[in-house]
Image 1 (cartoon, chains in turn brown, green):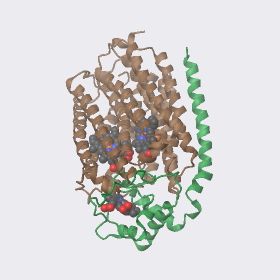
Image 2 (cartoon, rainbow over the protein chains, first blue to last red):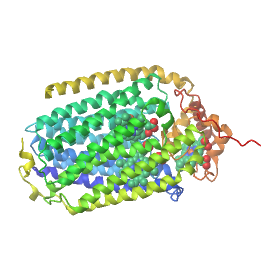
Image 3 (spheres, helix red, strand yellow):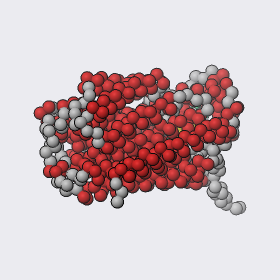
Image 4 (cartoon, each protein chain N blue to C red):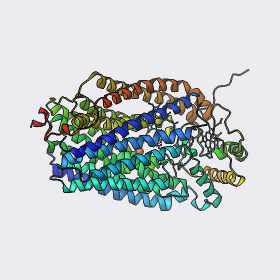
Length: 453
Length: 147
Ligand code: HEM
Ligand code: HEM
Ligand SMILES: [Fe+2]
């Protein structure tokens, strides 16, 4: 760590860990409900659990992104954060708004719009909070001694993510129009600007961990994010096939969304190539593992499993079934959850001065979580494919099919237990670092990896 | 070999170009295509009320509609023609909360007017043109033994 102000990132990472645990608890509530044990129905009905599960996911990932930005931007700009007190204020207001939102879901204070259930009045608070965050980041960047491509890509991703939140705040009488703009937020986030954030953070990690020349990494970064927007923007059409949009979206969305996996593939090839070029001397193996798994699993979950149901002819049958849940889990896990865990693994030793780089718990956490999530994806896939055949192709009633696929949810719970074990181990490692301290300050990272050409 | 500057131009140029195309097509969809497919002129005050209740109660947290939402409860896009009005009224007014096939719906205390609103909303939804979704089952019914 070069600057004391980078320590603020720790708060965001700790919050992310806490919310991840809560998210998992709600996942189990829904998993059991699908299996037939909806025992909490009177207190936490399924729709409350599902709103909570999905929003906690978004909030902890955003918390991770904010922490990442607070850690990376000062380092890249070579100066202290513009204002630490304001950053602290931003942290606490973010945490409080998050808590109110989640509590509100349990008493029916929400909007029925998947992933954007946070009610309007809170939306304004979220917007204000994010503006404060962006001001702090932009001031740091603009006043910095240097402005790198990596930091610009990361910052632009954050700025556009904030801007895209706005169309999601407008109310429409027509459900189809409502949904049209909901995708401007949800799709253009995960298959657009969040990939910018992902590219920025990955580039930073690769520069640090592999020692490959910055110019080379940043050149390919442009290519990757270029491919993202080339395919991802018009790829939004894959959500307009069957939601009231005109039929030309079948063609446009089909073609461009089928190209989207290329961007993820490019990300994978980019990371693997840089790793191979690098000198492999950096001791932080855990950070390297998570960085590489982000690049690889995001391709599997978003790229391949996205492609599996993105063509209009397939999507006609899989649209709105458990097949979508299969893809949603591995895509979010591979691309964004793993990314946050990667930057945490990289930055915690630097913030705390404790070198937990390569320990058993860390490796066990990595493998349990990844294998667990892949097994969960397989369970969703089995349930989803069965649902598609029975309900959509053979024409059985929804509830008949739901009762038929229950055993797959037992498997889901088993897999989720393995996954959760991994997350718990990760958090044990996280707590072992303790709090960040100024004693960890050093002008440059001390490792050999940084000094290769 | 590609230089960093060329890569940057590729990124910025491509992004701006595709953003403009996307916004252009979206404007057409919003002005012409969607209103036509969804019979926007038939969105009455009753339908509006229904949409608001749909929103406020987060029905989408269990059900899908137009294939969007959660996967815990039946797809409702065509529920009006599948079950009919009386059935839907019974669902929405069940005193102990609907559900006898193994899963429970939330118990609601809707007024008569609110029930009418939700029914109107589902009736409006029933008539939307969604490019063939939901597709009719393509498999023939199972063989029946001949006796
Ligand atoms: C990291 C990137 C991605 C993430 C986090 C992600 C996540 C998700 C989620 C959560 C949904 C469910 C949304 C909802 O119904 O509200 C979804 C839907 C969908 N995704 Fe992705 N996705 C990603 C990338 C992709 C890619 C690259 C493709 C195509 C190749 C794709 C194709 C689809 C399709 C077709 C649907 C609609 C499913 C349906 O009709 O029910 N996704 N995605
Ligand atoms: C570990 C325990 C977990 C369990 C048991 C679990 C289970 C579930 C269940 C049952 C659903 C609801 C499907 C429905 O609508 O009926 C769901 C939705 C979802 N979960 Fe999880 N989940 C877990 C963890 C996670 C994690 C770690 C992530 C992200 C990385 C995640 C992301 C999602 C997403 C994006 C959806 C919405 C999917 C869609 O509607 O297409 N879940 N989860
Ligand atoms: Fe999408």
